[in-house]
Length: 118
Image (cartoon, rainbow, N blue to C red; front, side, top):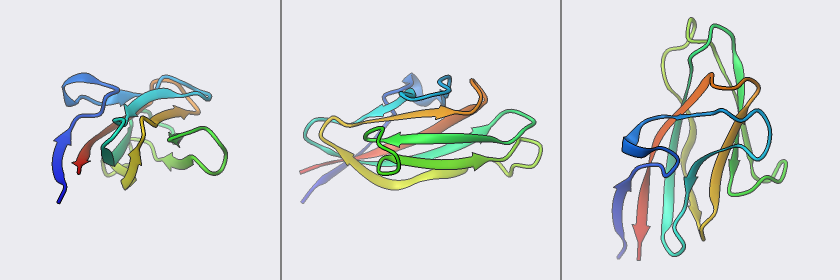
Protein backbone atom coordinates (compact mmCIF):
# COMPACT_ATOMS: atom_id res chain seq x y z
CA UNK A 1 0.00 0.00 0.00
CA UNK A 2 1.31 3.46 -0.91
CA UNK A 3 2.07 6.37 1.38
CA UNK A 4 0.58 9.80 0.62
CA UNK A 5 2.48 12.94 1.62
CA UNK A 6 1.25 16.46 0.88
CA UNK A 7 4.11 18.58 -0.48
CA UNK A 8 4.59 22.08 -1.83
CA UNK A 9 5.09 22.90 -5.48
CA UNK A 10 8.81 22.95 -6.24
CA UNK A 11 8.52 26.19 -8.23
CA UNK A 12 8.06 28.39 -5.15
CA UNK A 13 9.10 28.07 -1.52
CA UNK A 14 6.87 28.18 1.54
CA UNK A 15 3.67 27.26 -0.28
CA UNK A 16 3.41 30.64 -2.01
CA UNK A 17 1.98 31.15 -5.48
CA UNK A 18 4.08 30.81 -8.62
CA UNK A 19 3.86 33.99 -10.72
CA UNK A 20 3.79 33.12 -14.43
CA UNK A 21 6.46 35.40 -15.91
CA UNK A 22 6.99 33.56 -19.21
CA UNK A 23 5.03 34.57 -22.30
CA UNK A 24 6.20 31.68 -24.49
CA UNK A 25 7.44 28.12 -24.26
CA UNK A 26 9.32 26.89 -22.30
CA UNK A 27 7.36 28.44 -19.49
CA UNK A 28 7.96 29.35 -15.87
CA UNK A 29 8.74 26.23 -13.79
CA UNK A 30 5.82 25.33 -11.52
CA UNK A 31 6.74 21.84 -10.29
CA UNK A 32 9.19 19.01 -10.89
CA UNK A 33 8.11 15.47 -10.07
CA UNK A 34 10.35 13.06 -8.22
CA UNK A 35 12.27 10.35 -10.01
CA UNK A 36 10.54 7.37 -8.42
CA UNK A 37 7.34 8.64 -6.75
CA UNK A 38 4.06 9.59 -8.39
CA UNK A 39 2.78 13.15 -7.87
CA UNK A 40 -0.93 13.90 -7.88
CA UNK A 41 -0.95 17.59 -8.84
CA UNK A 42 -3.62 20.16 -7.96
CA UNK A 43 -3.21 23.64 -9.48
CA UNK A 44 -5.41 26.72 -9.17
CA UNK A 45 -5.00 29.98 -11.12
CA UNK A 46 -5.69 33.58 -10.17
CA UNK A 47 -5.69 36.52 -12.59
CA UNK A 48 -4.58 39.71 -10.85
CA UNK A 49 -5.34 41.95 -13.85
CA UNK A 50 -8.47 43.81 -15.00
CA UNK A 51 -8.39 41.96 -18.36
CA UNK A 52 -8.88 38.27 -19.12
CA UNK A 53 -5.69 36.27 -19.81
CA UNK A 54 -4.89 32.87 -21.25
CA UNK A 55 -2.54 30.53 -19.40
CA UNK A 56 -0.97 27.44 -20.92
CA UNK A 57 0.18 24.64 -18.63
CA UNK A 58 2.94 22.46 -20.09
CA UNK A 59 2.21 19.22 -18.23
CA UNK A 60 5.29 17.00 -18.47
CA UNK A 61 6.39 18.32 -21.88
CA UNK A 62 5.88 20.96 -24.54
CA UNK A 63 4.23 19.02 -27.38
CA UNK A 64 1.03 20.64 -28.69
CA UNK A 65 -1.63 19.33 -28.07
CA UNK A 66 -0.34 16.29 -26.13
CA UNK A 67 1.15 18.13 -23.15
CA UNK A 68 -0.76 21.43 -23.12
CA UNK A 69 -3.65 22.47 -20.89
CA UNK A 70 -5.06 25.87 -21.83
CA UNK A 71 -7.46 28.11 -19.91
CA UNK A 72 -8.70 31.65 -20.18
CA UNK A 73 -8.71 33.07 -16.66
CA UNK A 74 -11.20 35.90 -16.27
CA UNK A 75 -10.17 39.22 -14.75
CA UNK A 76 -10.16 39.79 -11.01
CA UNK A 77 -13.10 42.17 -11.42
CA UNK A 78 -15.35 39.30 -12.61
CA UNK A 79 -13.58 36.34 -10.98
CA UNK A 80 -14.91 34.42 -8.03
CA UNK A 81 -11.40 33.62 -6.86
CA UNK A 82 -9.16 30.69 -7.70
CA UNK A 83 -9.89 28.59 -10.81
CA UNK A 84 -9.02 24.89 -10.82
CA UNK A 85 -6.72 24.26 -13.83
CA UNK A 86 -5.12 20.89 -12.96
CA UNK A 87 -7.52 18.53 -11.14
CA UNK A 88 -5.28 15.91 -9.54
CA UNK A 89 -3.48 14.69 -12.65
CA UNK A 90 -0.54 12.33 -12.18
CA UNK A 91 3.08 13.14 -12.98
CA UNK A 92 6.25 11.10 -12.40
CA UNK A 93 9.71 10.18 -13.75
CA UNK A 94 11.22 13.65 -13.07
CA UNK A 95 8.84 15.32 -15.54
CA UNK A 96 8.13 19.01 -15.02
CA UNK A 97 5.18 21.36 -15.18
CA UNK A 98 5.80 24.76 -16.70
CA UNK A 99 3.38 27.56 -17.51
CA UNK A 100 3.23 30.59 -19.76
CA UNK A 101 0.59 33.21 -20.39
CA UNK A 102 -0.34 35.86 -22.93
CA UNK A 103 0.88 38.57 -20.51
CA UNK A 104 3.73 38.42 -18.00
CA UNK A 105 3.16 38.52 -14.24
CA UNK A 106 -0.67 38.59 -14.33
CA UNK A 107 -1.44 34.91 -13.61
CA UNK A 108 -0.42 33.31 -10.30
CA UNK A 109 -0.64 29.55 -9.80
CA UNK A 110 -1.28 28.03 -6.37
CA UNK A 111 -1.47 24.39 -5.46
CA UNK A 112 -0.03 21.33 -3.86
CA UNK A 113 1.04 17.79 -4.63
CA UNK A 114 -0.01 14.53 -3.03
CA UNK A 115 3.19 12.51 -3.36
CA UNK A 116 2.49 8.78 -3.60
CA UNK A 117 5.34 6.49 -2.58
CA UNK A 118 5.06 2.73 -3.04
